Length: 183
Image (cartoon, rainbow, N blue to C red; front, side, top):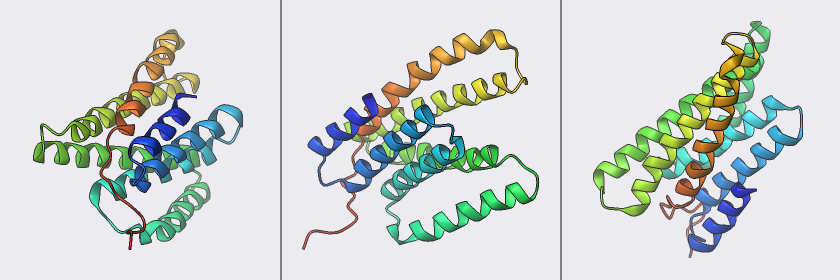
């Protein structure tokens, strides 16, 4: 799969950027769950962590928040179930907000260094990722009967038109962020 190749590529080219490599690996893991199992919620949950890794590296936040984030996301999903909401849509909302935040952070990085290749890759990569996920949302809304079924072939095609380039671009968006500083 191309996402696994992007992870290997990032490891080879940016081996010190642990956050990027982990985010790409989590993306690969989420894709694997979504493609090969019926566990959509688990797949999107893992995608949330991939986006969190991108958020941490782009914002330079401390990775210590990961545990609190996991608990909050789990509570959010549980609350949605108790409230009668579809937990998949609830977790997808969190994921979508993270993705938008990553686009904003990538845009901020690009504005500071518009000639920086990696900053440009981050901006275009997250923009393409959002376009892909909008198509995924349209696909689900179509399959759930909210949109006409005739758009399904186009939407399914556009998912891959945006997804693969987004991951190649993001694999080139290194910030050099590490979990552990070298001593």
